[in-house]
Length: 313
Image (cartoon, rainbow, N blue to C red):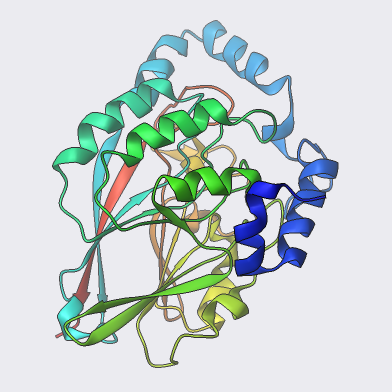
């Protein structure tokens, strides 16, 4: 039985999608083994935060790791494409990911002071607004709402593996256009680019890149929002020019030099953080502004990113 608050979403994306997502949330959202793209879901382990905290305290790194988690950096990335329309040369996208807002209170507070002075054309959020993968989400939504008030419209988003589809009405009421295997046209000076977004491909596996790409003319410049970069092959095959993702946290707790111990993803490690390329697809994996399990980071500072699109030549 679906919530009455989801009726508008059902009209837009269909009852099948909403009911399938809700069924998985009800039966599997805290499942430790065998659900999603990887066998063992560490983020669902109730004992993981205590073990991590104990290990960091024993090694004397806990205080530093806590301070690191709150120091959000602003990154800059340039994407050059001959396919980009002339009127979009210099178009800038502010990319935020993996807020985990109720866990990452210090980082969220820092973000409020960062985003107000930034210049960009659109803002995109690539999922994971809630701290845990299950349970209440009201506190997370309160933090996201405060952040949304500081962001310039338009703002687009997708859900991640930590998010319930029941969060969607509140997110859209804030002015975040949530994309569920859907596509939006962005027009400027008589030309257009296309922004598509898919539902979580990692845990819920409710993504449909073909459906999201279907309205896009084959020769048009297009951007895909996907919570995880694990969809890189399908995105390239569908003809997307640029994909924005998060999910990996860049490892969050990394060895010196930024080498991740675990990425919680099934993909080449070179795609675990920052800019990368696969065939004709340019991609960027944000390490995220927030943190999972505990508000701690080592050798992997949190970030938000300004992506500037440039026309080749």
